[in-house]
Image (cartoon, rainbow, N blue to C red; front, side, top):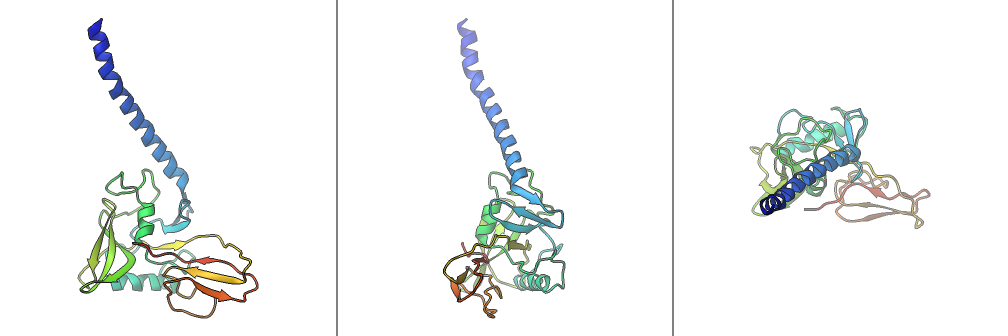
Length: 218
């Protein structure tokens, strides 16, 4: 009798752990299936962040230099490349990538049962830049979800995964619209086309909205 009890004590925890892991995996799959909306037009909406991503994570079909990636985005927004009806695509920030990823998984570090295709287990460009000895760009390793600094060079080729903001407009009572963060080219509504790193007021408007064009985080 004592032997039987002893075996049961040591067998039950393992059984429960396996059962819990199975339940966790099922919950993660269910969450991913409700989190992402495949619009069936080449885009996928992440409801957690209101960001619209390309369904294919490798639209150019090959890695490219930093300058080529920026040019590719510009050509998308100019209608020279497929843009799926939108003209405000941009290179994602590092923070946007981190909010998309699930580092509990690897190859790629994405939520289970995500709807995306063509994800490369390699490095992707972000829009986060800086300058040390020379200009650098933060890149994301999609295999593990890690973030590293990459010096800009025509010899460095990374993958590009365009994103755009898909936030609803919010009315305000102040008569002022604001745009926040970087990557807000031409979206201020006051005729400017420059990029701004801080909140910028556009005053004396009749129907005012708060324009969110992305934010900059490292």
